[in-house]
Image 1 (tube, rainbow, N blue to C red):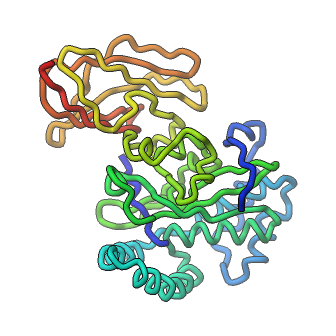
Image 2: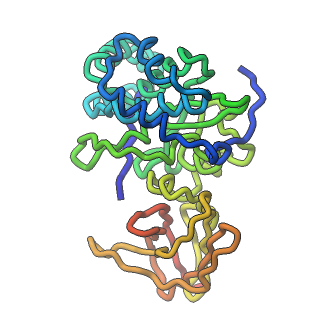
Length: 335
């Protein structure tokens, strides 16, 4: 499982619920190819870069696609900045004025690192996406908020720690996260390039599983609340890759009793058949599959049951193929 660790840093408009499925008839091959042909281009002249990426494309959607894939594949996450910001956030967690002052001063250094070395963190990714889009006459905003991972924003909202983008295409707003599309920091704090297309114009209900904006209008749905965000199961980059939305259990922490059936369900967004679905736990470093029953797939909703036969505490993971896509904790009691 790739652990997508946050790369930290830091208009009242009618918003329509929209997603990549709105563009399922568009072939992005040309846009992606243009992004590849311009690999390694300089950031010193953003108007020129935006022109090279978009001038031969007809629609704003294709233009934005070329910008997005270029940024994701040509900009790297900066672990040094990540560690610096993480340290400062802890140091000034009780003094927002000092943190904001330091942040403003640090932005200049971070911007120079982006221009010179093509390394940045989430705010740099979001800034670059926005600037290149605006130069192509595409309306785009930076969205600041809370990113949820195994390490952050689990039970309470901590300090805002992530940034992403909202883009307006065909009079609708869409969400994307170039930071988490581009790759991840591994256990050795080394950035690994690993493009994940699932964060591009993502389904807003899936996106809200690990993104909570400071301004809730950028949720692009009316279902997610602060409480639902914090109580939901943990999802991963692989969840976006497989395009699934966990539905049941609704909460990360579940209390049940032994010999009682627990229902699991999730929605598939790309209508593909899923043959390798598992429920697993880890005993030490060993993976153990749990028995599942009554597996069904009806209209894109996959459901199955599991019965815990022993009391205790369990970290349970939903796995598709070789990827963990959702995690839960179970407390199993006698009654």
